[in-house]
Image 1 (cartoon, each protein chain N blue to C red):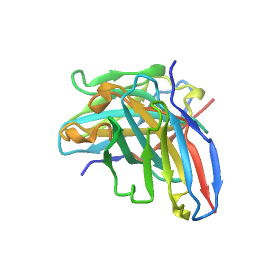
Image 2 (tube, rainbow over the protein chains, first blue to last red):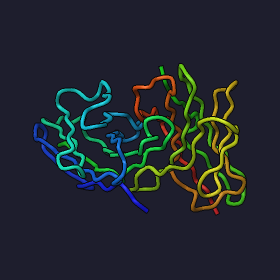
Image 3 (cartoon, chains in turn blue, yellow):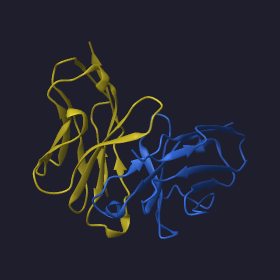
Length: 116
Length: 117
């Protein structure tokens, strides 16, 4: 069964460093997302991406964050200058054409980011 | 504003007994409702969804959920629990009235289900 894959599974970084989290969505999917889950808290929406541009972003997704689909297969989340509060599990997700409405999202296993 | 409430942080049931994991929601338009399950160190796996039609929807692993519009609820159920069902369960909602959301889901805090043998 096709799946969303994410790398790295765990990254430890120093505060102020740049981090790039990578995702390979399911190949025929058109919509891509990043969510995050701070330990013990809700899964929160960060950003959605469609047709090579951001469709929607939450208030969490400030200027420190950016997303890119550099080569037609990878979908990346960059955090320019990490803060302690960026420590979380980051989930990539993708969906097909119906994902814009009724379809379900398919999630990767997550990248755990620890900022020291 | 869209939101989801899962009133129970933990649900404990004996194997073979029925289980219910509760979820209530708030949206401005018609809701699209989803249940996801998360096993330890794994991502979120889709279980089932309600879009329209029959209020009782069936999903993976024998789970089902009942949409109740008047109570704004979407409780997850299973007639006979298994130890392997032990996991973290998330309810999520999308507001169908907001065409620009393109997949944005609002999640509950999750309910830890423990099924003991």
